[in-house]
Amino acid sequence: MPEGESLSELKFDSIENLDPTPEERDNVDMEILERRYPKKVQLGEKTITIRPLESKDEEVLLEFFQRIPKEDRILLKDDVLDARTISDWCKSLEYETILPLLAWDGKRVVGDATLHRERGWMCHVARIRAVVDPEMRRRGIARVLIGEFLEMARDLNIAVMDAEIMAEQQAGLKMFEALDFVAVATLPQHALDLLGTPHDVIVLSRQILTTAEAGVDRDTKIEESEPRRR
Ligand SMILES: CC(C)(COP(=O)(O)OP(=O)(O)OC[C@H]1O[C@@H](n2cnc3c(N)ncnc32)[C@H](O)[C@@H]1OP(=O)(O)O)[C@@H](O)C(=O)NCCC(=O)NCCS
Image 1 (cartoon, rainbow, N blue to C red):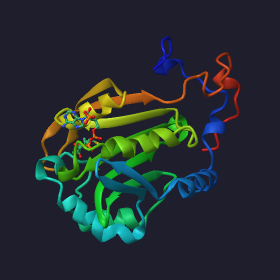
Image 2 (spheres, rainbow, N blue to C red):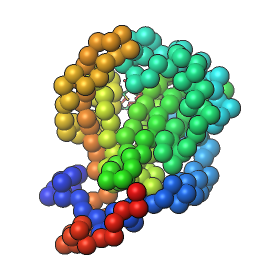
Image 3 (spheres, protein in one colour):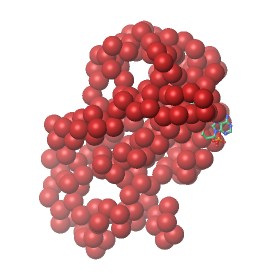
């Protein structure tokens, strides 16, 4: 974050400009995704392909989650071994709300990162989650997937990226810090893992658009803008 800037100083001329209707958001997002993907990335000796999750990926995505060790899985937000959960994700794809990006090593999924868009007063905020195949960790896969979201943020009108992780997810904590996310809050006992054990949740945040980059008139008063549509 540039010196002198803070999250609390972000102001926008009109929330309406940043909070399009679902149809407007859908059109814009699809154009961006079709332009970018599939994309090949060289990581060491491996060529990894990045593209959004598609409905046909159900089986291979479930196989990916079956390779995630139990100690990681129980700390994930959803029960990823439940075939119905994966099926629901694949059948109800709405990239404008949740954008899942997969990393492929040939026909195998080796990484999954999702961008969860907020609505209304937090329409400029998105939350990131990421999981990588244990055999493929520390090769830069999460860095690449999250880097995709960071690169697209400006086009998607995302000003702030957040991540919520349990205090025990040390690799995730280190990874987000390595990507310039800053821990901004700890929510005590806010998460129950899949075994029912409570954990503190750490909120990490990274500002993407500075007021200068967003071309924002810092003197504009929010009350003067048009009311939001939803
Ligand atoms: C967190 C996770 C997604 C990282 O994936 P990854 O592909 O191994 O991460 P990368 O290789 O891109 O690492 C990027 C940087 O993050 C940091 N990092 C990642 N894993 C780390 C670890 N275990 N220990 C210390 N630093 C780590 C490093 O700075 C790394 O850069 P470097 O390798 O050049 O030093 C992976 O460990 C995972 O799936 N964990 C289980 C799920 C989880 O906890 N997800 C996070 C919550 S949403």
